[in-house]
Length: 283
Image (tube, rainbow, N blue to C red; front, side, top):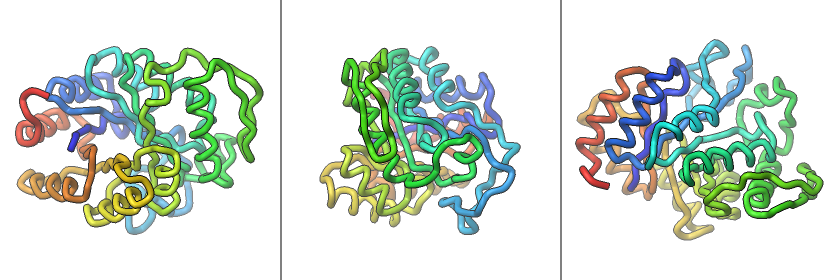
């Protein structure tokens, strides 16, 4: 199992904390560093947050969210080995061509280290505030995957989907990884599993128990054996429980475990202690 780290790119983002965590993760041998993405947070929205019992997140309209893609471009210039991922970009905040261009640019500037996580988007009010379509989100997600791979591999292309329609265009530069650029589908549900399996992508699970992660993994691999499975886990405040968290995710079939919890200067010391226990000195 590989290990990644969530960057402190929201709540209290700063140059010092983002670079400190990224450089420390690279030095310690973590596989990857990750951001997550919102452009705006509406002052009010329906309680459909999928990671809490009451459907509401711990953050609100006043919470700081650094732009995920700009943050990764910034980190690319300060690192050499660690992979750079976003988990995930909700498609209701962008469009397929812009996303293809951003992903390719980061991949070029990082010498082929970028990984893209995308999702349909649960915060519908965010998409509406930005003037983007919010209907048929799963279908638009599938069409976006098609467009991304065309943009990354064809000199020019056109696309005529049910919702996405693009005249003949070229999107350059193209990513060094080409169609091998890893795609992750974020979401908790049968549709996310189906889309990941159908389109040769990995499934990225947020803040679920090992038992639930294992269920998703079994469903995913029943449709596509060997499909990648990632899980973001908030590390326990009690470090004596870390062994159990890691072991449970490994048994659940997770390929990539992304850890997070702190979003301040304490995160560096926390990942140093984690690495001392779970990462070999030389990767």
